[in-house]
Length: 414
Image (cartoon, rainbow, N blue to C red; front, side):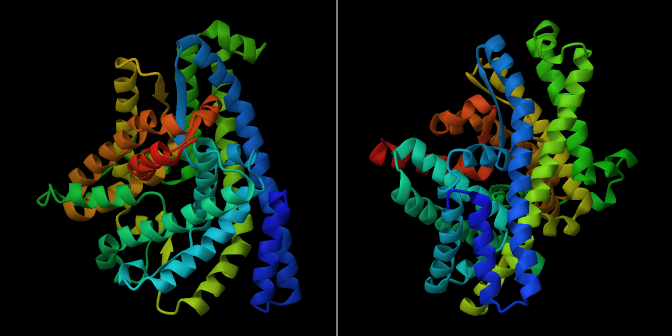
């Protein structure tokens, strides 16, 4: 049970058997779950191999810690230390979520969290934070990590539902760690009621290319790596690049990092293709009438241009965050996160545009970008063990719930 691929394969096997699937479907689903998890972990190994040497040089050169807020990459890091606890907390957290939703009487809480990869990342975040700050281990860590995961995936969609029901006719809501982007996007959009809608604004044709996440990632990450290289200096980078030109080396490292993220995403999608139907089938039997809480891309079609403007605003917010933190000589400097710039910024843009047109979409993206990236100064205090990797669990949602974690740490912490 200490091997995550085998454990998750068993979960898929049991779920598919409970649904009385054909033998071929059970076999295929189980194998895909195991192989997908292996692919995910291989992607993690690759991006750590690319990122860690550069982060080490950066920290030695600048006497500060540079970290990139993310959830997928940090999940891969903590899986190396909690490979038993996280998968179990993931499964038990879903069960706790189902029980809470079934018991609690309020309509806004009647949601089934089906964004399984985000629930997996939240299980990783919960287990790691509890282990680092409360000295929990083994069974107590699994139990508390499961409870924390179950509560978060129940509360977050309940917060989002009042803001999505008009848009979706209350047929589904958002199940993600971008709830703050949705809420603030809506509120900020309300400041610009007379603004022209985003779909009435003509954008340069090249921006449409960035609607493809792989294109965005492979464009932004080399630029970020070059910027880091300029801070470190060509002589130090030459110790890593060998005979290759140091600029070209950084470009290739950025592309490799992007490729490792895409490999990880492929692995996640491969095993979730089998686990999600099992979870969905169980929830439909236990929670008739509940609405699904789904991944953020289902909302992008409501305002495709607003999504693009939002991610541009988030990018501006990320850059401003770096300038602010460097100016303040902060010990922890945020590195722009291409993942959040795209996904979180797009959600902020969609909901900002809905109430406030292109101005609402742009300002919502900027504000969320600032919260997510400046927020690493808040997050670092209870995520110190992961900082040397150059990564940190983030998003505006995690920044907002951080005071609760600090309060609990003050009362119950090790």
